[in-house]
Image 1 (spheres, rainbow, N blue to C red):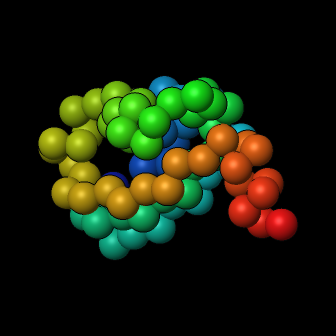
Image 2: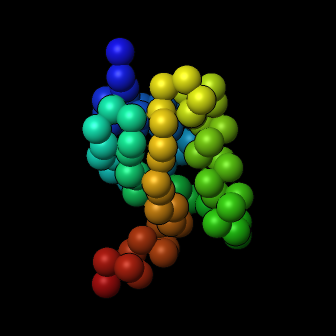
Length: 81
């Protein structure tokens, strides 16, 4: 059974404190906007590693691809104007 965008959202939320998260996708390929205060002071690759850790083995077994935008709450606020 393929995971839904909501399931991927819940997987991420279970392992990472998020202020906002949007996930879309078709069951194998997903896109996510993830806003977390835990990203503060981290480089992009470190932020992505945090998300991959939250997803754990699901990245190998269930989720074929995940494109993500990772922002701190301050970055997200500035981006929205």
